[in-house]
Length: 473
Image (cartoon, rainbow, N blue to C red; front, side, top):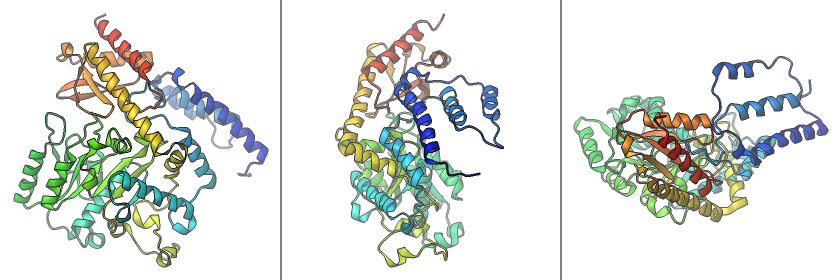
């Protein structure tokens, strides 16, 4: 069997696929946001295909696209108000296709020098955007925020314990402690677990009335750790919590971290994109003084999954944490002033993650992102006012377009939010979520789609109003 198809076959396959893809891309808003969930039916749809001998490419493409159309929450939909999953821009989409064609291997510089240099340039560009000195910074692309946060924990360990890279946890005498908000992403706990520290080393600090990490309690817990003969390892501030879009007081956290000589990491997986907006970046004060940052471009830069970045203001820490000598890898990095990506990250073999961001910047520029992110924040302001005008109560205080809200008249009714949400899901016109805020199950809306306008938000509020009015019948 030949895996290489001839030019005519390839052309026909691309045309067949593009017809399907372009139809979906052009008509996304006409698809239901929420699929009909029937596990048996979905598994039957998958299992009915014969994988032994293969078959016609048209049938294969139709099978996959039909499956994705029928059995997916359509995150590119302008009325998907969910979990930081935006519509992909076309620059990002074509980038994934280009990358698959050339299939560059970014483990070593010599195998993909253009691709590695593109990612190196982007790291310096993002370092500057986040307030680091580009020439004195470092970073690496990651598959997701989970990997980036795990990288942060490993860097903090290697920064704290001189022999950690060689001896591991055996060299650690006192119990290391990671401090973060109780609203921090649970990838922090996973990073602690997979690094060998164990999630019991994570100290979750309660939030204040503004849902920010309580810095008074933070300092008390640090002093308590010292009193217990524990070893404060790192503090993680969050810039845009998953639930409420809250940005912790990064400047104050940094002061505490510097006072106690503790590694300060900012999980800006979502909110970091605010640094690209001339209107929003002032709200992120303090991030520029951190030791490291997690940023997910796939959350608010409208590029396909997954494209994350780990940045650090310590230019040596990634090398100290990940570099290892091998006999089989190319030795170009020993002779040239270059860095092999495998020596600076958890990954070894790696794809061209940065291309979807690079291509997007070539298409739209930093100015384009400033405009689109600022506009989405404006849509958030519009929705807050619209909800308030219609008798809904805003539960969170965030300048990012994440809005948690409820009806005070139903605050004690534990079924209200779930019933309304289930009815909205059944109609499949919108998708939003629920999040507990101050012990109240609030509706949660996030605006991350560049095609979401006041029109879609008006429709959403109308849906909510209708279901509220008909709650009892």
